[in-house]
Amino acid sequence: AKMKALLLLVLAVGFNVQYGGSSMYSSCSESPLNWCSSLDSAVECGVLKSCLQSNFSKSRQTEDLIEVGLYYESLCPGCRQFLVLMLFPTAILLQDIMAVKLVPFGNAQESGTTGKYVFTCQHGEQECLGNMIETCIMNMSQIAYPIIFCMESSSDVVNSAKACTGIYDPDLSWDKVMGCVNGPLGNQLMHQNALETAALKPPHEYVPWITINGEHSDDLQQKAMTSLFSLVCSMYKGTKPAACGGSQMHYQNYCQNK
Ligand SMILES: *[C@@H]1O[C@H](CO)[C@@H](O)[C@H](O)[C@H]1NC(C)=O
Ligand SMILES: *[C@@H]1O[C@H](CO)[C@@H](O)[C@H](O)[C@H]1NC(C)=O
Image 1 (tube, rainbow, N blue to C red):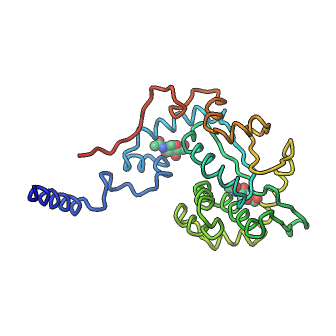
Image 2 (image 1 turned 90 degrees about the vertical axis):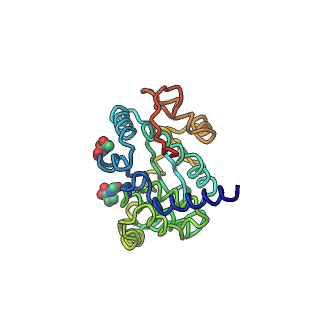
């Protein structure tokens, strides 16, 4: 039995050396977020079928996407909990039928004038900085939501921002982000957030404040906080995606155990 175990070990090590570090689709070097972005990467990563199906359902469904709006502030614990544990996972599962709109401002206050707005945040200056970084990243990156999820799910929202950006959008220069944060662009973008938050009807009373297709009610808020997934699936009027259940379509990809 010892010999057999040893032999297995040698085989296993040999296998590891031979195939060490590379997967079956060794040319797949993109992150999963980009697998469907081109035909080439879909083929290289072995996910062509699911990309074509997902692209097809997206092209059919863009018109009546359910838009989930989140009015929040970067350091409010309830906001972070909703964003990290509910909104982001749901947005991934229901990406074909759901759009997300994030407005970081919440209970902040604005004073000053054009070009020189001054912002005061409920949880202090760090929160204003977090709001501003997230706002700038949404303006500058195609991969903003994973970066914001990464920040909000880390123990230090603001200090994780640079590393999170490096992980998900290595091509985005951190200096450029900080240029926005400390410059007129950030000031202008945050002013837009202030205006959008002030324009809410009914006006927000707390954060996280959720809108569905631009509407807020106690009932929608309650349902979104309890199970956003069920709410979006139930409100969606088109053909429900497989993730909502009840569909016979299966297009998961498996890595075979050889
Ligand atoms: C999916 O759609 C995008 C945008 O329309 C397109 O650029 C991409 O090539 C498509 N991917 C595949 C695998 O067809
Ligand atoms: C970034 O902000 C500028 C200035 O408000 C705006 O013109 C531009 O459309 C924004 N870009 C994106 C991708 O949101």
